[in-house]
Length: 405
Image (cartoon, rainbow, N blue to C red; front, side, top):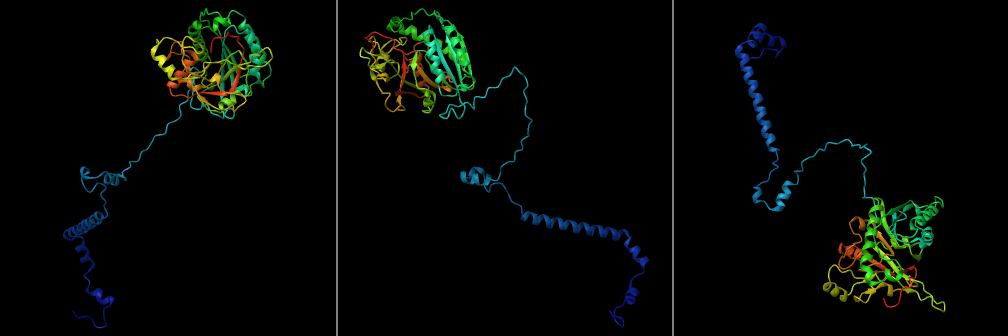
């Protein structure tokens, strides 16, 4: 091809282009358009194939490289570690209960701890009463002196089978103690009346005779259980059993006992008795707090299961170790002794022990009843039962005749 003289110019190029009408006819021909469409499709298909090939090169298989049946535990964990499925929870609006007949009791926050005062833990103080009018004035004087915050203590009493003026005197003393002012008033006071038809005479000789012990302990067990289940509330952390005929006790007894953090704890029970020279013989009162012996275990295997053993009587020799014969109030008051039986003059119990169902059997439980049966039942359930040999609470002198333990 020969180029024009002077090089390629617009004019020379234009002269060689086909006329515009001829070009238009060419572009609009069906054959040309079909060729153009086929060419475009071929280009698009080619680009799609090349993109798929490049995508295949970046694709990762999330399945195992071999059959799960052939994988070890470690390989199974490794390949499945990425497979956590996202979970979306639908949030719900709180449900509001406005029905006044529905009451909610949440026992989870109710604890019994050594820091009871700081945690404002509430105490239920329980006392069963029968023909107790002569002792009530001193009883309430001692309660008044308790240093545990009175607004955290609920009082409850069961009056049953009384022939004297126990109910009237109790009501008057409660009125007196609660009217002392808001600073010393107790949180509440409850009186439960229940007669059990007990016909056991209450004079000292009959009350403490061996023949009376079985029926007497069963009757007291019933009274304690009626009182407990009538007065125990969901917010009580501790239950404090205290007899009416205590003569003297430390003002900080609740705080002292709570500091031990035991499920069940009792002190030593003694009494004052003065001889002709005015010397206090410091008599030992409560033989129901004891440590079991091999002799006692053998005895229970030999006697009728319905027989209720009573301590301090020659009819059944148990050979047990009595806490009443141990200890000295002049020594370390916090020394502990694990017990198998306890007396009922003064008991501090974590409320959950009672809520679990541990009560005072009014029948023979492992040949024991009432407080000793309570200790046996608690130990069977795995609770701690302890006494403090050197921590003495003073009981009235019952003037019992010699011959018992």
